[in-house]
Image 1 (cartoon, one colour):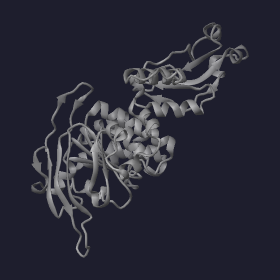
Image 2 (image 1 turned 180 degrees about the horizontal axis):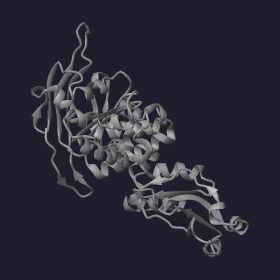
Image 3 (image 1 turned 180 degrees about the vertical axis):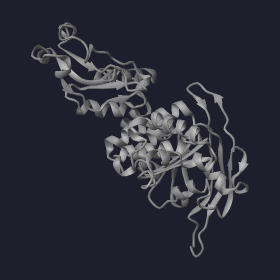
Image 4 (image 1 turned 30 degrees about the vertical axis):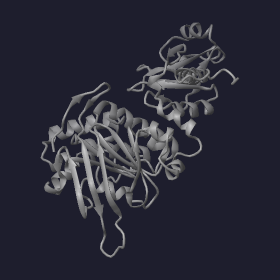
Length: 394
């Protein structure tokens, strides 16, 4: 299996095409196959999400791609090569694999976990060490802080980040992800989803992602395969097409009654115009900071790397000896890969009804407000011939 790289409008594609042709898994003694003649093409460089109820066969279908489960019949083709003709160990080492609760080796440090596959395929120590640090940086973990820690010393979200780093360490063209974020809390789950989208924008892998959460599928997937019993494909299309026109009542049940609200999940914050606000840094003098907030009454405090820390008001600055001693801690921030639905949820929980947006390295990028959402929805309605969102229907 070899990587291919072609330029696209948003990123370089390093993934490869996967084709499933009538793939079936029939376990001995069972009257019906667990997976029955599944056929689908997974385009290179896209995230394809398999979504369906528990027990429908979606994980079995995914595991037949890297032959953790051997198909009873049918063909899996990866980058034009029949997976059945390849040595299974070499096949698996060329495909990243990330599972729920990370699946890290508890007796190994973070660095050794990440180095597992590069070591198996013969990389030298210097190259492995450099790649380990690169992967930790890529998933937002400081190498100096985390490389010598053990999994038990990490939070659930940090373990999942290390799991993704390990899956990507040998630079595989294909990444299989089996409900990787299902065991973490909702806030951490949203952050990990954003992180995956950021990584995909940089790396352009082919990702097959299994989940039972349709909202997660809409947020992450370039395409979604809604599966029924025995992995029968009920609909395989883009999230927008499935939300707009479910193929049958079963798919409509997955979509739910809030299809209009889910449409907000289809737009990323990077696709809308952001607002701005006054900013000061922790190193600014108290006089400079007071001058900045004089006309606005409040500002955003940034650190030396322009990462947002907290809100500060003119009243707070009036009684503080230094900028670093004033302000109200900032809650969770949004990334450019966050969706407008993420933005709406942030606005509903923020005391200022304002979401702070950060760039790739955590730097301040702008604000999202209710006005941002209204302007976007008005533009969508105008584009489709409807009345602006601020107007009442006739």
